Amino acid sequence: MRVLVLYLIVLVPANWILFRTLGHVEWAWVAAPIIAIGGMVAVVKVAQLDIGFARSQNELAVLELQPNYSRGHLTRYTALYTSLSTTYDANSENRTTLALPFPSDLSFTLRPGQSVDTVTYHGEPAVQLADFGVSSNSTSLLHSEQMIDLGGPIEYVAATLDDATSQTNSATLTNRTNLDLKRAGVLRRTSDGTFQIAWIGDLPPGRKSKLSFEALKEQEKLPAEWSFDLISAGAERGPKLSLEPLAQLVRQSKTLEPGETRLIALIDHPLAGLQVDPASSQTTRGGTLMVVNLESPALVAHPPKPDQNMHLDVASPRDEREPEMQSNPEDLPDADS
Image 1 (cartoon, rainbow, N blue to C red):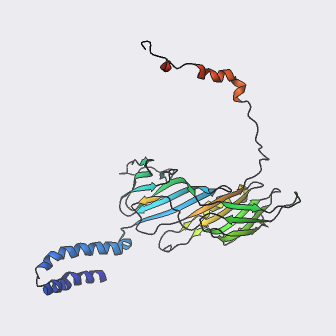
Image 2 (cartoon, rainbow, N blue to C red):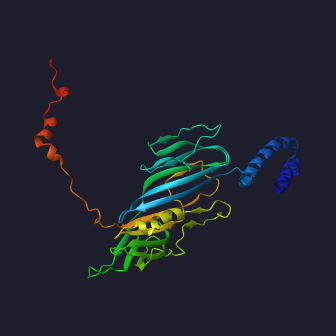
Image 3 (cartoon, rainbow, N blue to C red):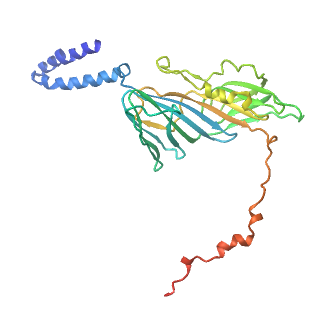
């Protein structure tokens, strides 16, 4: 009602007074349709979330790193919602990017009136997944993967003891990346099978943290503050986002082998590298679960074995040289030359 009253005031008295002052009252009729169009645009812009003209983008991702490497593998799951049918393009200047539609239901079947759409993937000059259509008042998912540079590695140094039979409970961890890590913790399983945890908390870029490991029984719960539920502005109006189910997959004690150490942390925002057009009218929400394999398990249970045979066991040096010694018919001179 307030918007309607304001529109009528601008359309009638304000419009008439303006052109009455200019001495051309008849121009008010020309300005009327312009004011009507401007009012329509203003109403849609101001009240688009309330009346349903909205697009939103939510993203959950997993970033995995290997020790002392500054590049990591990023897997994104992007949910695109639109109130009106929209065709999206996903663009990336990262040449390692791969993207495909992701089914929300593995047993999905077409409903009456629905048809199969075709998307287009480009690799030159930049990566683009085009023609990704989302029906009105529905959500569709994108799955993308890429290698990204973090500006530096995660450095992990375990304290050493002179007694080889002893297990140290201290280490240092340095964040050399350009990422601000939240709710970080380190899990490890010692050589004797003990499951341990070292809580860090926040770890900004360039910060070093001294770790103190404590034994954790298999049935004990992890720290209460080690939650991967995402809390962001406007979360009370939108869907609740959480990386907790993904975090549980890498925090379970049975997933660590003896000698394995793993850092698990949260990046409380989506990482750059994938641009979706048209952009969301709401703020893009999401987060990234960071998993760093600090130490790999020893290859005791499955030690590497030599090959059963080598190439030279079945092919002599002469056999390998014969293809090179044979002349190519195209290289032979022409009989008329």
